[in-house]
Length: 581
Image (cartoon, rainbow, N blue to C red; front, side, top):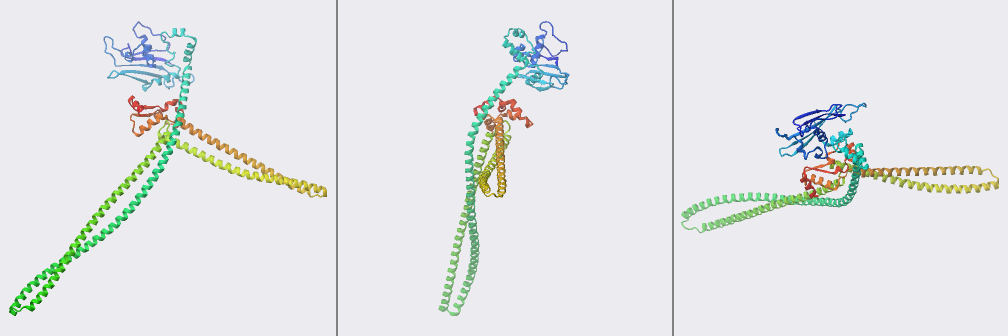
């Protein structure tokens, strides 16, 4: 690999596009003063990224752009491209980890309308970063901050250095310093992670207490909800009963009203007919009176008596008519009372509807309180479970870890039960063994006694008793060995269960410790999700989440504590977030 060409455009003293070819065997750039020899070296350092603009003899980035001189117009941008030849080596690999014969590294500086400087890096025409350049060249052992480029005064400074300073320079050239820096960064990140784990532990203890209170509040809210539901159902049943009773009463009163109105209309019709009949009778009476006067010649006592009787009858009929009218008035009053009762029933129905609406409102309030309690409990669980990934993934991971812990606990409980059961069996068998040993001892003593008697009496049967006792003794030894094997098997199962439980606990602790967010980061992300903070983009863990979940551990180890860093839109958003905390 070597630098094949240098392409500059409006860089310092170079006007327009200039290409400097650097073929193999090229050793030096010569020319008169002011021709741009040093600017070629400055151009190389410009692309690689100097630590300061003073290294390339410029006060700021604007001084790198061609100023036009005396006769030309100043440029608004400049660019430099380094063209590296990247041939294949004898082993088939390339020094630069890009499968191309030529690799182009470009850097452009331009001025905006407000004369602000904007820098852009391009790798083979694709937008890139300075760190990408450094990583690419570092793979070829050509770091821009090393001694690949020897500036004026570097040799003199190297000669004047002490042995320790010179050793540091050699370590930097050999790449040892970068490893030392990585070790220091790893130690610092480890200390940060340990601090995070300790803070997470304290936060977990606090949140566990809060979670217990929330569970109590949740149980109380559930109880209140059930009571409100029961009260509402009772009120509804009571109101429905009252409503049905009043509705039946109203229907009865309406039927009575209709009957009274019909009877009143019939009586009115009878009164009208009676009035007509009365008028006709009065006319007939007048005609008869005239005929009687003409026939009787003035003697009308008997007829007068009949007339009086008729008048009494008429008066009686008039009284009946007035009674009917009074009854009609009473019917109207009763009808009005029925209408008033109907209105009261409607008012009661309206009150019942309002009470029902109030009961429903109370029920909704209870449901809202219950949902808020559940939400708060979920928030607390999220704070306990929060890691660099999205909240939903963290909840699932913690649920899985909890399920594993529960399974391990269940397995340990089963193993403990098995141990207890086996221990009980071992005790029973041990008692049986003791009994068998006692029986064997008694049999041995009986055998000895029988042997003595046999020797005394000279019998031949004791040999059979000896064989029987030996068989029993052998069976007792076999039972004892079997019990010892079963006890060893139970102990092995108990140790295996304890190892599984310890492994599950370590896995849970490693998950919660490696992926847990700091308290401040978790609070800021939670506030963003609730809409309390604007402009929060997310954490590094959220933005850099790999597509392949198997790369999560590698990414966490590489970035370390930076996974919990929060990315915001601007400084004002950061200030608001700090103030909110």
